[in-house]
Amino acid sequence: MSFDNVCKILAEKYPTEFVSWLLAEEPTKVKVLKTELSLEPIRADSVTFLQTENRILHIEFQTRTISNPPLPFRMLDYSVRLIRQYNVPVTQVIIFLQETDNEIAFIEEYINETTNHRYRVIRMWEQDSALFLDNPALLPLAPLTLTTSPRGLLSQFAQSVAKILNMEVRQNIAAYTGILAGLRFEKNLIRQLLREDVMQESVIYQDILQKGKQQGKEEGKQQGKQEEACRFLIRLLNRRFGEIDSSIIERIQGLSTEQLEILGEEFVDFSAISDLVTLLEQQENN
Image 1 (cartoon, rainbow, N blue to C red):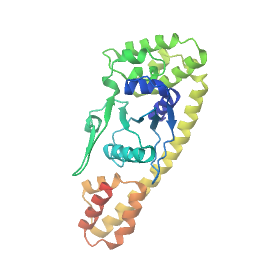
Image 2 (image 1 turned 90 degrees about the vertical axis):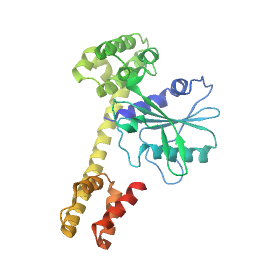
Image 3 (image 1 turned 60 degrees about the vertical axis):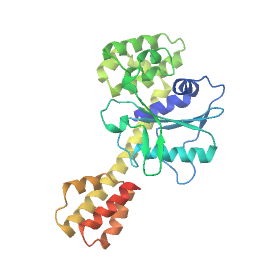
Image 4 (image 1 turned 90 degrees about the horizontal axis):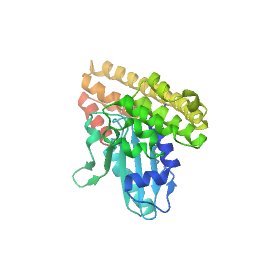
């Protein structure tokens, strides 16, 4: 199940509420933009672009800190493409859903010799739960917020859901939260406090489950291809140069299938292990 995709659904279903939260303004009109930008397409499963009258809000939902290319560079890339395509200011926000101490969740800029690009970072585990408990559109994020009593927070959420009068909305909000709460709580506790039958009656819940299963199959296929390409390349390198240092193997394992294929094509021209290290550095910097 893709937790960040659930957040993408929420942001696109309730764009005005997300703009009000992240830009601290009450927009009169919000348009959800397509996530594929011009030039070479970017895969954007967990990205939402919301256009107000004079600004684009780019929201990136993340459960993981590992990204290829790295998140700071991706934010710069998105910003340049958005400004080129729409010619308006862009506010960018990365929302980390699951608590982590990885430094990438605390970085708010991309810096190189000539560029300093800034963006905002929101760590859900540091956010005041009151804002989310009082807003149905943001309610599914409430279980991820700051609390000294996680069980009590989930109980508060269940009470807030019960107050939603519209049955369809109540079912969908419960469904969204039942999924996101899995980032922090055991399934049994979620089932105790959120009626599972209510969640499962939601058409949205069933759709998310189906898409999650399909995405899981696709990701499994891609991961299988990457792992197979990685094992094959490492065998070739070991045969050519002897046992490869573990630090180099780790760097190879972090490459995408496409990068591994390029490395395999260049392999025939390697005369020393230093050639491999040089190409790895080029791959990692691209």
